[in-house]
Amino acid sequence: MTLVGHEFEITVEGAAHGGWCVGRRDEQVVFVRHALPGERVRVRVTEQTSRFLRGDAVEVLTASPDRVQAPCPFAGPGRCGGCDWQHAAPEAQRRIKAQVVSEQLRRIAGIDREVVVEELPGTPDGLGWRTRVRFTVDSEGRAGLRRHRSHEVEPVDRCLIASPGVADLGIPRVRWEGVRDVEAVASATSGDRAVVVTPTGSKLGPLPELGAPAAVLRRFKGGRVQHVRGRRGVRENAAGREYRLGANSFWQVHPAAADVLTGAVMEALEPGEGETALDLYCGVGLFTAALAEAVGPEGRTMGVESGSEAVRDARRNLRDMEQARIEQGDVAAQMREWADVHADLVVLDPPRSGAGAEVVRSIAGTRPRKVAYVSCDPATLARDLAEFDRSGYRLVALRAFDAFPMTHHVECLAVLEPVRPARRHLQD
Image 1 (spheres, one colour):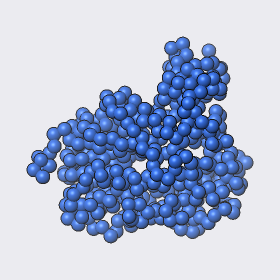
Image 2 (cartoon, helix red, strand yellow):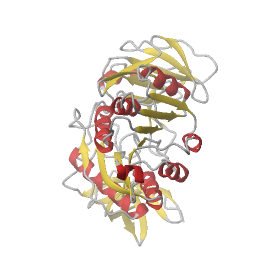
Image 3 (cartoon, rainbow, N blue to C red):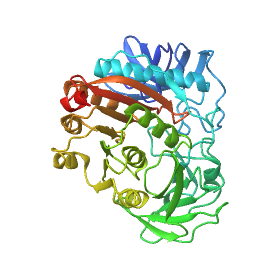
Image 4 (tube, helix red, strand yellow):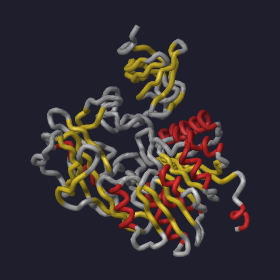
């Protein structure tokens, strides 16, 4: 019997990874959005499997003291899926994320650790921070955001977590005829803006007038972008350096994240002059540059990145550092080529899918004295930490940062050291 659309009351027990809370109905697990731990809610079932139900809290019968009125009118059951926790106070959001990270570490990696999610500076209310927003265009040319677990578009007139630079472009306030999606990028430090447009057909038609000047690029099938007008990318400043990056290249979307994470990585690794450092999934060279400066001209820093545009950006950004080298390619394949490299330090910042067993074992094979693992997904982080443990590396420190307020996402920094340090490190 299908239960989709059916409603019932449950008491929510706790939070789960992905922006859900968890309850039980007749011993069946129910994942609930728009609820908070401890609340009694009325749930409308949206999805049914043989093992569990998913649903929305459509009525709160007993509210948590952490519940607040969602600031965005487009948040709520059946509406925009971009934010998960707008109905929770910011400090409560951080507590929930900390509990989720701790639970993932315990369940997947067998690691018991208390976690504190640190607030990043500049966004105490959790709004106005996101410097990159991708809008989907519906059949009427209206730009909006996708509903949760759906291809349907929720038309919006604004996004409250978008940074002022993105908001000023006014993407949702104009019609986008013949366009599939529009990505708005606004530098947090230079004022540069870019708009990346994906047309529905082979030709890009006339574009609407935007509320602020911006470079325009066209995205082709497969992700390649072509410059149309204005700058080819944006400039960002972090850790005392300027970085140039194409509108398609990765950069942290919270204005404070690049500085905070770079400082945290350097504090964790404590690089010394003359050392060898690897930066895996290096992007446009943020951590590579900081490491290269620290190890000095007598040391060396080697980065690897698969994206061709990011590699071009990284090489340009590091052209003043002879001790830094960037390779383009798959990280696992590159680590096989570097099998004979003896690294003192390794930093990795993989995509949400994580590094995987082969990369983890390759890192351990270089016998670094410290590893800094930056992750935006606690589940794949925990999986890889378990593999590090099997490879002779233990977790010695973990920090978590609220780099994505209002959403379930959290940025973590795990620091690992060898259980048995290499002989050369003991001699040092």
